[in-house]
Image (cartoon, rainbow, N blue to C red; front, side, top):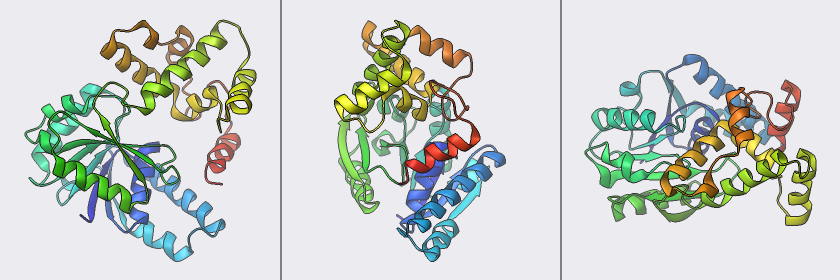
Length: 295
């Protein structure tokens, strides 16, 4: 398994592509937009430059990693020889189902189809294909080159062979795979998103300000990043999508998104990627915060 296709050149997609390429996999990075591909490659290059500056990799390692990545705007061409596809598109069920139906048509019969979804059912995604036994969740954490965890989500039909292959592959990427069953939010977001939502409710109710809430959680609970800052880093639109999936899946009001979160997303305030969320992110501040994650 040396050819890996990654669908989506955004924050997660370019991080996944970076990670596979750094471990000498041939990566086909696919996006419908050439501009997004160019931006994704620029991000990978900047992150590799930071690693060179820290002397965690050499300039030769950087160049080898970049050489391992090729880009495509055509899905069929990009996945033609893939042994594994990792989908990292927007957290939207209809979009993911369409992508997996297309992957089922275009990929070789023995290609494993993985989704980096944060919350959407792997069973439902797998049912859109003729190979549900080869569909699995591979949920990386952001920033992918740094964070060790990979949640591996088994759908109802996912085979043991598929799970074992993906588990072994994750370990070869120097990640720590954790087996998770297919329920809304899996483990990471089932625990994390209610906490973030409650932090937003705490702000919404006027209990304390943004800095104060984050400071309490950092200094009192030893969290490396406060929940509101973390929400900005994840993307408020992504947080909202995950909470909606969990609310629809469990029919439990504790997963209902806070009205403040809903309004911020409607206003286009998505966090670091839009330049404003609970914190202000000028271009310089955005670069600084991303750079901090690679220290």
